[in-house]
Image (cartoon, rainbow, N blue to C red; front, side, top):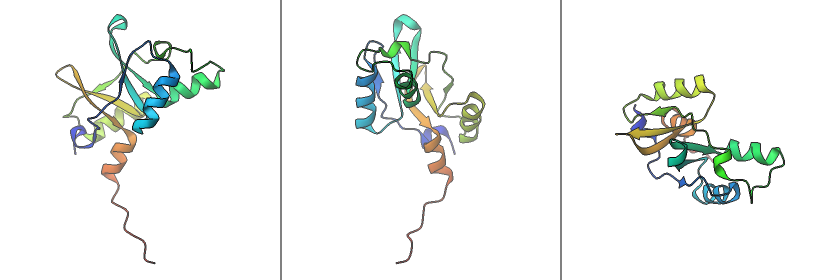
Length: 130
């Protein structure tokens, strides 16, 4: 099975000047754990994850004033739609992260998460008898 079969193609994209609170609200509303950060001034495409927001709040930083760019990962490992799920899982395990931005022709095509991969690999749960 390939990354294109598992990835989410509707992705949340935010700008670097948004606050962490704005990003958290958007992520919560979309029920996603990561957002693509488009920042042409910092080299292009980065990622902000729920863990980045959690770490900031844990440090006592104010999510209403803390800008996304201060918490964006810009050293991103990208996948392609033709990677196998094994390749994606290996990259995540090696890098210690749970999301990969999927690029197709240099442009974001989606995000694949550990949860997406598990959903593809795990058999559907059968209904329990009453």
